[in-house]
Length: 224
Length: 238
Image 1: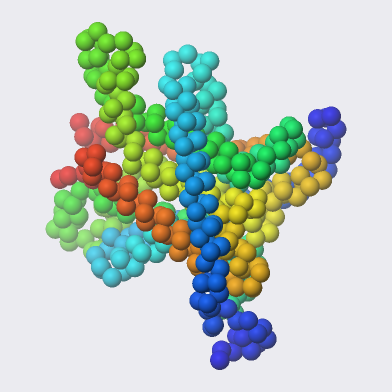
Image 2: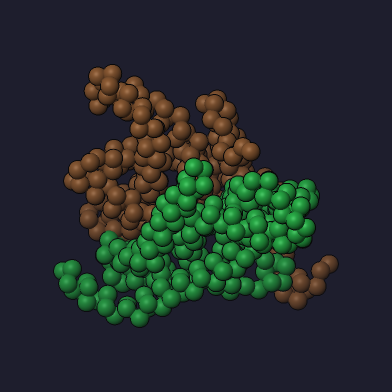
């Protein structure tokens, strides 16, 4: 019986491949945009301007405090009210980029704060400009703290992209939902869907673990 | 009068006449949704703790018989989205002959998912106890169970409380996905208002506010627990 069902699933192979493609492209675009925006927000937040810092903090809290599904609904159903017509893919990218940016902002802030103030003072004394201090002194050292959770955040981003299926985008999860209407073996269908995500996410999880171990070891050396 | 509503020609422009009256009218529905979200999250968290303790105990064993399956389970859960896991159970359990109410499937999915993350938190807590403590226990002639109960667990418990509350926050937010298998929790209430009255702004902004309430409540609790337990927030001095 399983064999029969497997055969009927083979017919859905192109659809599944397209779904996986949509998931990967959606995640990749949001990942790049979210990282850029997240670093920008993180640097701004530690920049010293209280007002900007408080505004970013409030926004990050707002995003961290609400379910991603609700954020997608808000973007998809309410932005058109302002005359901005969105398809599901664009709405998904906006929502995912925003979510990633907020979480990455927090990671970057923690990384920047981990750099001892003496380093900044030394850079200041050497006459480096603000931009030079950030780029040549603070960020390279902050990266040690930032990198492992950043990769972990990418895994969360790929997984969260599945929620965009709720507004009808045909990503991998949505394909599973469509196929299970025809092939009523939910265990098999969603096992395969899960396998698709696993193949993308698991190497990243391994990478995050390795980075954590390596950065931890490097940190230990410095303290000795 | 904005041009947008003239162009689209719709008579129910949502943001210009944001209807607080409708929100008040639907307040009982939102209230019910909020209550459901709270208790189903609490129940799922209890389930997650049970699953997490068992998995953590298994993954700390030296022999592979328990360790390997526990690690495989934790990795499988962490590398796949909750929504796919939810559908796996929702469409899969009936195939095995278990026809359960959506609410039960939802609580099961949340417990099994969060359990994997709770296991990692507990494992990290136990491993954070310095080796010397265990050795001191051994030197004092304590058995394995005594060492666990009297030395390791009381200290590990302290360290795990703040991250466990963090996981509780994640779980409450994740429970919104249960609306997709039509469990009538908070997000579902917002969807109903959006579809019945064509008022997505009223529906989704209101539930977002309710979720923020839960978020700040749990976040405050996490900060308080950190202070009660005498844990210093991790920030390097000098």
